[in-house]
Length: 119
Image (tube, rainbow, N blue to C red; front, side, top):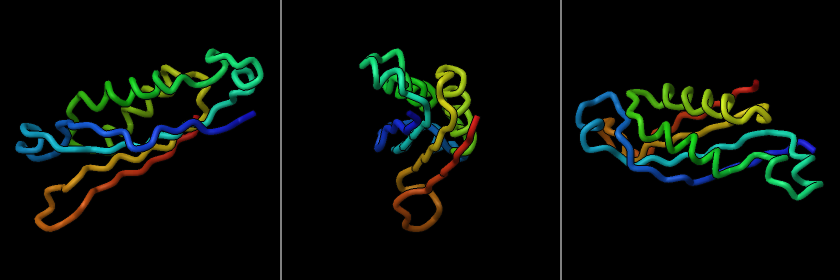
């Protein structure tokens, strides 16, 4: 059985951005991540070893959010690489990263980067 496991609305205060003030004072970010995997074994045996542990998935995202990046695109790439390296059962990753109140010289609730990659 193939399916998706998702973590939605993860919130972080982090120091991503091109401008020095973004990297000094930080900003708020939200992350949604969804991975596709075969979790037949986990479902039939009721065993975490046969599925994607979403605590591990969270730790991958958290770890990369703690390392400043200039671009959300670069941050997304690092998160996806981490997922594929640490979770071999994952066949695809869909990721959305939003920066709250981006410094664009006008009113904007969030700037969003969305990516999807298949192994």
